[in-house]
Length: 203
Image (cartoon, rainbow, N blue to C red; front, side, top):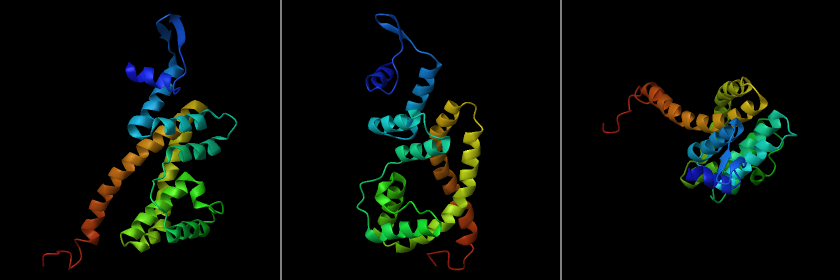
């Protein structure tokens, strides 16, 4: 397959054991890594350079699984090129302070916090300055989802299975959350919006 050869050339897959000048044998570990790379590219939409960062985070063996999850999350998260609004940065810092997270001093020092600041910057640019007010209720709701995520990850077998689940579960979970959130909007809007007397903009 040309794709596999490309991944091999890019160093994303380890070389197989040569069985002849033009053939190599690949074992289950190669298959696991191939599945992971394809999930990062096809599901996560990551660039080859970003995939390389994720794999480097995964292959660091001297970290706890908790620390590795943080490293993987950082590598998966891709900050946009949006110019950060100083007020949005302050909103993120205030949010973290309210939550007792003291490590968010430099918002741009983390891909995850940079993504959040970029989203709030865009919200401000289109006139939604108070989108920041959703951060605390979002976090409370997402803790329930995070609990399910972590239990799913922790319930896997070997350490390698757990690490693979961190990556694939996060990427697929992001896609599923988008879809299910839209379904939830439809269900809730029936009561919140359709139930209001002035809900019909044509009348």
